[in-house]
Each structure stands twice: as C-alpha cells, then as structure tokens.
Amino acid sequence: MDFMEKLSTLSAKLKQQASAIQTEEATKTAFIMPFIHNVLGYDVFDPTEVIPEFICDVGTKKGEKIDYAICKNGEVQILIECKKIGDALNLNHASQLFRYFHVTNARISILTNGQVYKFFTDLDSPNKMDEKPFLEFDLLDIDEYVLPELRKLTKSAFDVESIINAAGELKYLSQIKKLISSQFTAPDEDFVKFFASRVYDGIITQKVRDSFTELTRKAATQFLNDQINERLKSAISGVQNPPVTTEISSGTEPEEQGPGDENEIQTTLEEMEGYHIVKAIVRTVVDAGRISQRDTKSYFGILLDDNNRKPICRLHFNRSQKYIGIFDAEKNETRHPIATLDDIYQHADLLKSTACLYD
Image 1 (cartoon, rainbow, N blue to C red):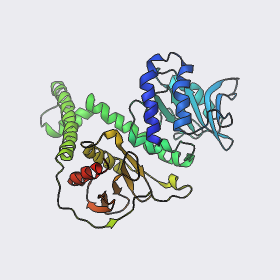
Image 2 (image 1 turned 90 degrees about the horizontal axis):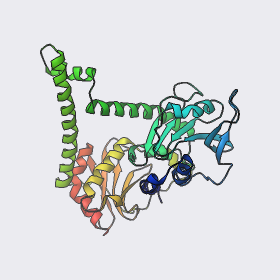
Image 3 (image 1 turned 90 degrees about the vertical axis):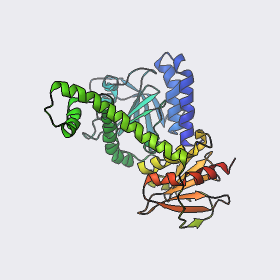
Image 4 (image 1 turned 60 degrees about the horizontal axis):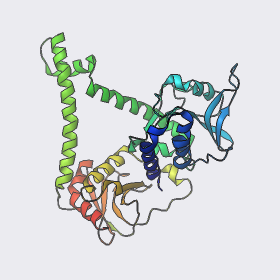
C-alpha cells in the first residue's frame, strides 16, 4: 500500500473501533502502534528502534516514563506521549515531553490520542520544546496538504534538518489558517472594524459595529461559497478551448530515482491545489477514491487506481511556463500551457475522457 492508503486504512479502523476503546493502553494497541509501525514504518517489535516506556531521569524526578521513544542510528529522534482516544490534547498533557525534550537528542516530539497527532520541535528556544505544535494531523479529517511533511517523519525518508527547516513555515501557516477560520465564523472587533471603516463613511458606533459583525460574517461565508461554486461549475461544465499542443511524449513509466532522491522531492501547495481541481473534474466520471497522486522531481503525476499504467495527467509546475500533460488512448502525453490553475478547467473534457479510457 502507498502512504495515503495506509492512512486511509487506519482512519477506517479508527471509525469502526474508537467507540469500543476505554483505556490509554487500548488506544496504544489499536491505533498508535499501527501508526508508528504501518504509517511511519518503524518496527514496534524491535526494542532498539521503538522503545516503549522509555525512562530518562530528569533532575530530581527519577524513573519517569515516556510512552515511546523512536531511535535511528542508536540515537533517540522522536518522543511520543499518548493519551486515551477522545481525550483533549493540551499543554498539561505534555509536561513529560517538555522535561524529556531537553535531556535527549530528540528534536521531534508527538502528543497524540490516537486520532489527533500534534508535532512539536524547538523553534522558539534551542533544546526547549515549543508550546505550540508546528504540525497537527487528524486521522478522521486527513489534510492532504500536510502529507508531504508527514512523510518526512517516516523511517525511509527521515531527515530531521529538512523537518526543522519546514517546521517554522508550517507552524505559522497553521496558526494563520486557524485565525482566518475563526474570523470567518466569529469575527472579532478589529477584524470587523477593518472592513467597516473601508465601506462605511459614518461614525462607527456600537450599533454600527454590531451590525457590521453579522455583515462581515455573512460576507465571508458567501465569499467562500462563491469560490467553491465557481470551481464546481467550471469542473462540471468542462468548458473546452481549442487545445494548444506543444509536446507529445510517449512512455508512462515512473521517473527513475536514485538513493536519497525522495528527500529532494518538494510537493508544493500549488501542485496539491491542481490535484484537487483535477480530482473534482474526474470524479464526475469515476469514483473519487480511485484518483491518486505521485510526485517526482520532474512532474506531479495524477493516476487512476494508483497505477502508473493508468495516468490521467501530469502537472509540470516546476518551471516558469506551466503545463498540464494529458494522455491519449496510446498513452502519449500532450502538454498544454496554462497561465493559472483555473485554466485546468478548460481541459475538463479531455481529463474525463482519459479517465474513462481505463474502464
């Protein structure tokens, strides 16, 4: 199974069994150990690689235990503290992680209840665990944007420097997204005042402020709905302009990658957004669960059934002129230049035809 399939399998198990789990130990056995073993790829049955009940004396505190320590090359790299499924995850639950973090070589720590995983490092002060996670992951609400970063924590791709370098951006992106979400649902006074002062010429009294609080919330909701509806209408209508074919190439085998190449692949937000646009288009003719993606150094591939012999298209975004490459019945790739992501919708009919070729 590929990385996404492993996560989806564990997510399905979580949905089926979570209600039957009553203890922290059961949570570890049912969900957390499979996450460490199947998803991250570490051998939970090898005590030199995954140490349960890891003990490290901290000052006057002796014999305290952390649930798991993951080692690589004989050094502790990741610390994991576990709670029961359904328990809230907050700083009070992370006290042992804080204490252990600065007395081990670990640069990554995880606080989890088997469903939600919070990842911490030491961006704010060296060797001191941050109070806010740089990455959060929910198995019941899988965010495909964070999957490239989650992959960096796997045994085969573990690169602590790459993780730390990306952690700063991830941390603040996550916080900004949460802030935007909260402002769109319950705008605070400063947010409301920002918009009111630009569209209302009178004095902003409390009555005006109350009125604009609701107007701002409604406008934000309508804006998001309009964006979604516009994308969906474009995908369904499949408006097709005359194609501009710039290159045809045959062969659909994956790009050969040497040792260490996987770590050099950087999946961008633009590529993931392009993937979701293609998925929205193609899902009108095939089941959405059959549409998958694979990134390489040269292109971002979108496949049917996660099968490299069933290519739907390739996104060539790692250049100044962007292209979408679409395959015909002979599996020849025709590259069409695009200026913006919305231009993908112009090729909706071709994308749907390609997906239908394999059924």
